[in-house]
Length: 202
Image 1 (tube, one colour):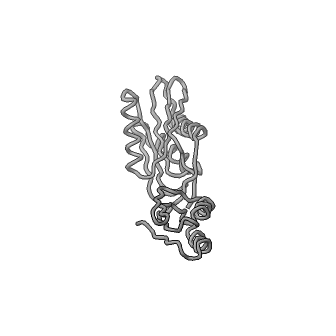
Image 2: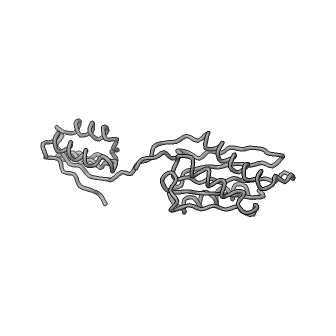
Image 3: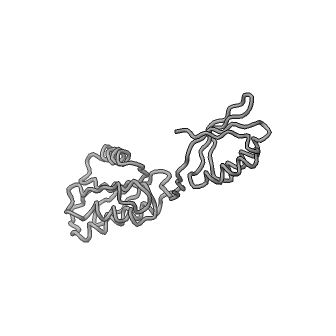
């Protein structure tokens, strides 16, 4: 499965009626990663009025592993609007924290929901993304004569080479996208006349 994820954490600040909303968005592949990021932001801004957050750690729109918190704001005015932004962003594996410094003017429930959603939306607009795909690791052993052709095949199927060992032959440790494994196995057999040895690493 392929989808896009945030490549590096991004921070964006908006000011609304003297309240400051600081949105931090990052990639989180698990609830533990999300909660660790949330705690980092809490530690960075210990004097803030609220640290509201939301996370969704699966593919885009996936509802199996998600969570949110209003952190003392009126129920439904912070975490849930933030989660809705994440769920409709087209990105996967996301965590967002919005740190609020209260400015003395109440925004009302509608105003709060809009402010928290806006902060996350604008942060995501500024985020750099990369494509994420599931890969399976293998070792691949072959004669030297086949190395160039095999490396070209790995690149063709968008695989990665983690390690290369030269001995009597060549042994590669590689990662192949799950969706192209069948194609890779077939073409590997063709270009090496069946002599390459491919073993899955579990």
